[in-house]
Picture 1 (tube, helix red, strand yellow):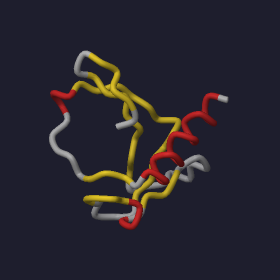
Picture 2 (spheres, helix red, strand yellow):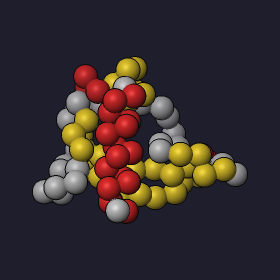
Picture 3 (tube, one colour):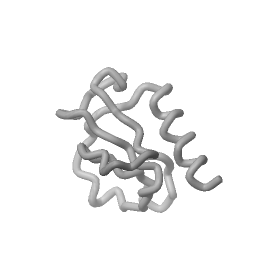
Length: 81
């Protein structure tokens, strides 16, 4: 979750276990979490943003460390630059 879009919606960045040879993909390892984790090495894809309602979000898997969150947000900004 990148930002609260208000009215029950969130702006999200795709996270996948496959890098898809995406040069902009940002690796996310278990050590990048301040709490929780993912079961496998994963990749945030800053060029794959979407909006979702809180009604379809099933559970919280964890919280990324501030440094990794900032890295992903920098990737999103670079995508639009």
